[in-house]
Image (cartoon, rainbow, N blue to C red; front, side):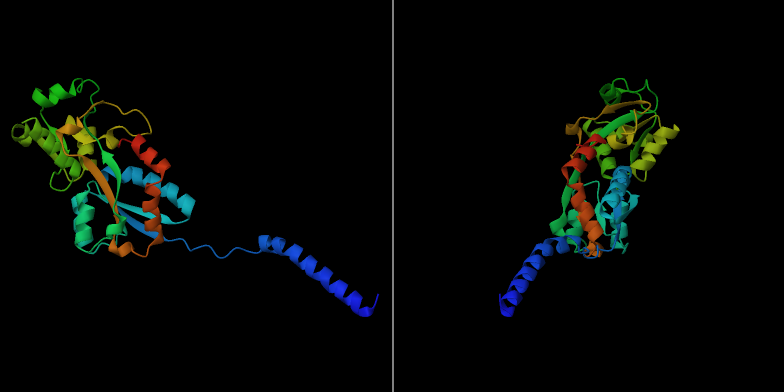
Length: 264
């Protein structure tokens, strides 16, 4: 074979070896740099704060991002957002507040989403007090009743609607113990400051165990639906962690988890 023939054969063999090695080289090539972790500050209605902290921790382990939770009544969070609080997203206890923020240019309307529907319960730490919840609310003797502030908290508004439906609102107003939010109202009952409270089921029936005391779920027809919505706020437009957390809330597994923690 001529020298030119040997050279051509060697070049052909080298090309074949290079082609064969290319997939292996691609497989071992280092991946591009991962996106840097981002921190998002989420404003959460008090009824959902414990659940949000659990979900934020799980989301952080999966995504590498960090979510910090600030909780208060929905009305107070709305005021803080208006005053420039640097929240990236809001998890409200109603559907109207996120849409109001959108109309005011403080939130992204394309991100509004319902994430839970709340349940209202009558609860006492006394295991024998709420045996017939309906009879107790309709005509029973109630010395004190804890509710969240109806002007600030959607669950407080639902409690007021319930008592108005039963025509007991005027009668019981002097006996109401008003909490700034549902967490404080629940603490009034837990501490014995009020024997009864109209509270979110999520605070009365935690997943970590059977609650002490006695409870009765208020029929949904006695008050407007407690639809809870979330929205990305103007401050969080470029925040990947906030956007990712809102998507995370819509995943089937997370929605099932939320339902198991006292929501519809």
